[in-house]
Image (cartoon, rainbow over all chains, first blue to last red; front, side, top):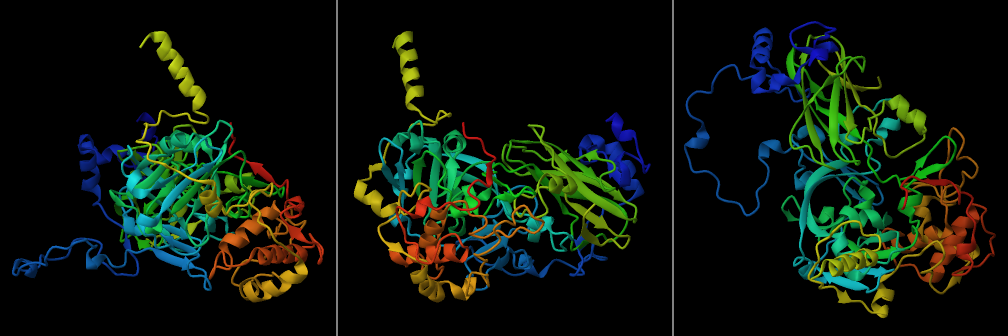
Length: 440
Length: 177
């Protein structure tokens, strides 16, 4: 922790410029440090700018016991719902005016904590709406280059040995406002929220593909959904056999309709399109089928005019969810910066945070668990002195891949790219405590 | 079991495994054999070599009428794009500062156009066009892109032979072993 003492801004426990503080402040063992800091300044929290919610504790205790203690409460419920006071925490829908089933809904990353996305808030990308599927009538066909073409029904699949995995799924088009020449001003979930993380449970694809006797030369598998666009893409057979899952459960309950009920593919670390929902058909083939959604879409045009295709693996990405645009810092003080990091290459190894636009960096605390192909929550203590600041995060994964700057990403691709944006994200903090998306 | 026999069996397992790289658990083997007829009814995909293309045919001349009724309200009278994306133009622009990516300029295979139109278009009634209508409307979109002539007949034989301008425009990032 020696390097942490090279303080630019000065002050107790600083690890980088702009007031970033040693992550030990979150540990019980850092008591002396925490005590020294808390003595100097109180912990603060960012608040939503437009709601006018109070930043600190109420000035006075409400008198007496609360009314809710004086009469019996509401009865049991068959399926619980969030508190009515949390009504504004919703997915933000953005769809085609003529084809309302073609669009997206954004996961409100700015309203969530931890690493698990509640099922009702998992992002959506549908190409022609959510099909209503009776599981008793649904079948999965495995055919093509296999010894034995087979069909599976849901009741049979539920008898197979299963596995569970916490896996993030990110749309290849997530964050694509980052390619815009001017920084978009909206909440973090409304332009980075086409990513979510859930525990998926199902049958290993290798079990089913082996039962069908997939041939050695079948290098690809066409996966097709039973939605009204017959969404289909080619996936590498090797990946399907390594760790692909035919998922039936999401966070402990059966898949939600909008997440592929009754079954979907989960290919850990791969972009969202390959996790085909409502999957009805897996056809083992020699080479890619070149569907619309692996040629016309989800490919990256480069300056040369050539395009990157089959860029399946999600590159390392991180962002700060609090504080973030739309929130306001009520005053100088200590803040806990909270954010998410993920990588399709494996595990998050390190997240660094900067408060001075990338001039100096300090290591954030990584919240356990840190798992392969899963969200990792990071936290950083920051002493805001009331001046201008630019907050950034930068993730390095366990294969030494580093999240690039926006400048580097555009240099490597093209300003005309539309997909696979994973550059460092910057929040500009004004002396008034407002937060804006900036390019820094 | 002798050591030698065990080693032999594990070798067999590897040889039979194909692309498998994991030791997946053996399931209860409840898959039901699918007949050729069942598969034929289910397999709606079209591949770049033309496999899967149905009988039937069409020309741009015939496709103009289908397009006007089924496509123009979203994609524009001549594929210029409205609420749905543009389908026409941009050939030769991909390496410019403002590339225009359309069926004509960007899509590498004509089979993809047939496949996508058949299974996904029009959104209000996917899989509702006849085979002749899909051939015709595909021909019309390719004609608007100056890739085929107005009276060129598209069918299961001629469609896969069309060389799209951006056929070699893609770099595969994921390396297949």
